[in-house]
Length: 435
Image: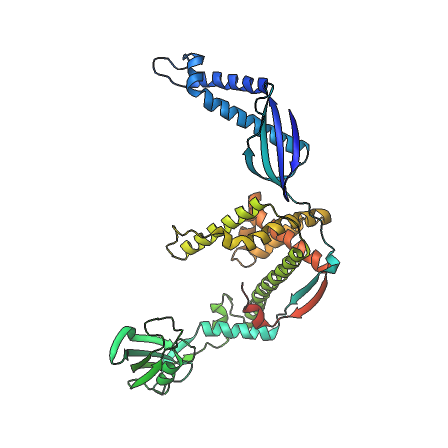
């Protein structure tokens, strides 16, 4: 076999392979004889049909398959020998001059992976996020946990912000009732913005058993298009007013959070540990995003178009499946892959940068790092040892922790090399960020 390599645009290359016809014909004869033993032809016992008859019926297909297989084998052998780093095989093109009596010619057009040279990491400028979890953050979290366990006790006074009210209401526009404007025994908490401000203001100050007509102006951008921009009059009747009662931070409260002996100090330590773990996860995620953004911005090279296209298609399918899981009828939804090209390009670029960075700097996760990360995962479960054993029972299950540990090594390495500006985040900023 002989072959030539031709450079086309950007990462595209063309390889023309030449195969001796004698080798191809030998392979065709071999496959014809295999087919002869396998095919069933009327009038002949299995394996007894004449070879010429088999050739007349199946010869064209067998010849085409043999030529394609031999040519592709030759292409991939050449790619390995010449270290062509094939990213994707795009197409096979016809070759002029196929009247060669000695050889068959096939041209393969493919994309190579780009050469990636890691940029000077010391020139990168990255904002590094930090956050602390102390007594104030524990207090704030405990307050949230108390509010999640709020009880409501009936009162005879007028309703005020923070109270839960149960009401009947009927709304009319120009004297006519409208869809969605009427309800019975409707509960909501005043002051939390569950209803329009004018509606809530009308309920505030009413006692159980009292009624009132309240004029409400629907905003122009209201989600209900039929009433957007219109004015309605609601007749509201209050059937129950209840004030919020938060549990005391005592042994019973501690027991409700899983502290068997009700020790409040232990509860606070457990809260601090859990919150600290979550804060660390979110801060790490922000720093990882900052590092990846910096790496992408610092490198510029051509991307294999086929890889970007495949990743865009994968992202489109992923979004479609997310819609389906959320209960949407999206099975026939066709999202244009072009919508995801920018994100796909970013992912492909990182997928080319990171392996080089990891290999050149020995940033692969160690067994100790993987074990520590699995232990961290398991810590939040009731039986951590059981979770750890589940991970280590199958090496494939460790791929996720291994990837995360390697990613953490990359982030730490880049932050150590780059110029970093530390940004301290408040507890609200961290917990309000995307998980």
